[in-house]
Image (cartoon, rainbow, N blue to C red; front, side, top):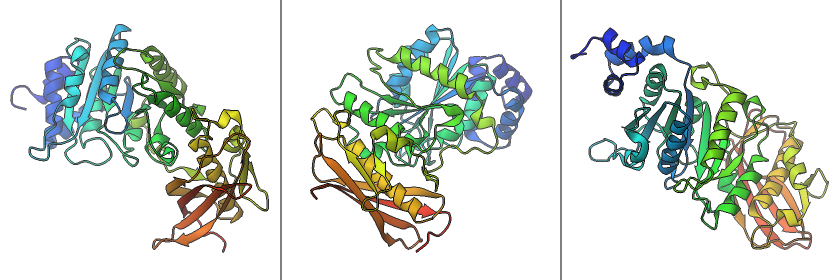
Length: 397
């Protein structure tokens, strides 16, 4: 430290001095022995802040959502720190600061501290220094620390190990609904938020996400059931309800996830031998018949806005058939590594759908590829699902 000693800087950070906080963050980003000493000195002062992570695909509106949350939280009297991880410039390696621009409305408020940092090629949606910066803002007395990841895909789930509450922002029109169901980024969500809620596709996206929450094998920690909310950040619609859910989640499961030792968060979707019946019963899916892995009569509640059986329901049927087949194979615990579904024809109300599953092949690494065929009772093909499954114990052949 050139302008002030480390003890003096730590005292200033603990007192909440903005310039000291900014200098300390820069020190953490530079790294080295001084950064390590700074982070270690702050460790006894951690555990107050509620860390809220926001992640989701590029273009989901995360920064606009953070700006809206800032306004609502500050209005309630909270001090809020923001760590916005921007993609690195391929030329300079620095952040482009796009997130900071979108948060300009509240970024200069005396109770708000916003820092944009570059990911610098770090995988997982965060940066190498994100945790240290979160710890610093916690020690500095911020009540809530919002962490916005870079635009993330299905495997960027590092935020689940850092945040107490994980918000996954989903833009309307997710495309292939398997992206809303398979193991990956949506599986870490404590809150699922459909952004741009004023767009026509928002309602169907919210419906598919609600279906997805019923495919979880068990509730999240603390028995928390993941809600799905639609918000329009530019107008503020839905923001108050989102803040209420954030507070409710903190009350239900507590704070300090990153400070706890080993965690079971962000593990792949699990298929236990004692497969739970909750997802199947929610949709009315029947399993265990000798001639079919799973069956379903399409009801009005299964229909999408176009009057066809929602793709998320068809996926649930295929998933139930695969799960039943894996259980029957006596394989024990397993995890879905990947899944791809192709939708072939529409199913209508009154159709009886039948899903049959079986092992199709093995990968070079020994994972099993299970194929599910979904068709009407009359044989008209509806969909095919291929799931790559990793077993903890080799299945009986």
